[in-house]
Amino acid sequence: MKTTFGEYIRLLRNENELTLTQLAAKLNLDSANLSKIENGKRDFDEKRLPKLAKIFKLNLTELRNEYVTDQIGKQIYETNCTKQLLQVAEEKAEYRRTLNKSLQTQ
Amino acid sequence: MKTTFGEYIRLLRNENELTLTQLAAKLNLDSANLSKIENGKRDFDEKRLPKLAKIFKLNLTELRNEYVTDQIGKQIYETNCTKQLLQVAEEKAEYRRTLNKSLQTQ
DNA sequence: TTAGATTTGTCAAAAAATGACAAGTCTTAT
DNA sequence: ATAAGACTTGTCATTTTTTGACAAATCTAA
Image (tube, rainbow over all chains, first blue to last red; front, side):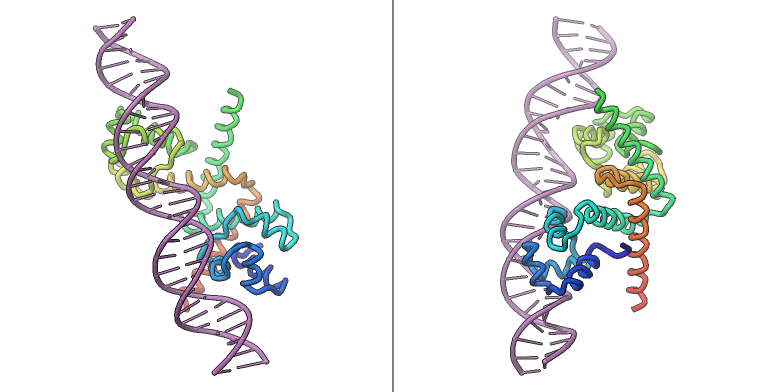
């Protein structure tokens, strides 16, 4: 999925022929805010992922992957992180994992 | 640099034989909070990067790279983002760049 | 035009991050 | 043993950021 999470929601909504108002109601939010989410002017609140998965009968884990990759992609974009630096970031994530592991053994 | 940003600050501080209190004063913050930063219990505030660079005579761009890779590494870690998903995230960042470019031409 | 759909602006409320202080632990020198 | 300095931890008020809601605007198709 090479779109933003907002565009992805819009896609799902259109495929299922729902209006902003209709989907927003199912998600317990305002149509104005859902509009902003679809247009990338606000973030989708992670706590609504289970609801979103249910509405469109999606696998929650896969949906969360879409969400996470969108969030990280956004940060990569906003920080102008190059591929080279991203490699470094990945190594640092790995380092945190080892830190956490050694914490567990203690 | 395969450490957290907090550990990096501690390293710099020790190399220069400063106490928490001394460095904190130079950074305009409390030694208690600097301690938390070094121990990864709080984030270093990005707006202090220029000050930090000046104190230790570091290149600001390189320091910011350390900071950015730490932040993204942290997010990768916290979201359990696999390498495969990170690849997707990178593609999504690229997509955002193209979005932004087409916006500019209009 | 009119109705429904969507977008935009604004603002108060909620949530998260930050700064500051007090009190605690740990280490080292005397 | 204890006194001093370095560091850590807990807490809380303040600040900043994010979110939800409403009103008003624009857009689109009948």
